Image (cartoon, rainbow, N blue to C red):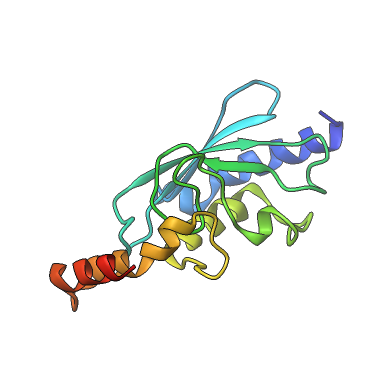
Length: 157
């Protein structure tokens, strides 16, 4: 890996370790290999969402062109979300693709993924099946809806 990428990822790794979110057990990052090309991330499910209380493991691969290109990130933990493949864990998030900026960091990636869990983008799904059933999930997780209403939605989709 290029020297600039190694120096940058080491600095960002330390930033995550010292962050307020890490101290509150909201995000975490660990080394998988000693040369900082593969990391293991973890995010907590956001409060007041169906993911609350969950811990979600992430595979993070750092390209040689980092920070000019985004890290390759996927969910290892199986998750039911319209912007995350329920099969491969691939993530549909603009900052991991064409909206990446070199000023972004590992910390911003982890926090953005946590925010994605709280606010799905159903118009840009990674998993069409999940996107179609997202209304059912919302119905089941809402205190104002009941199982009967959710079942009707599921049958109509």
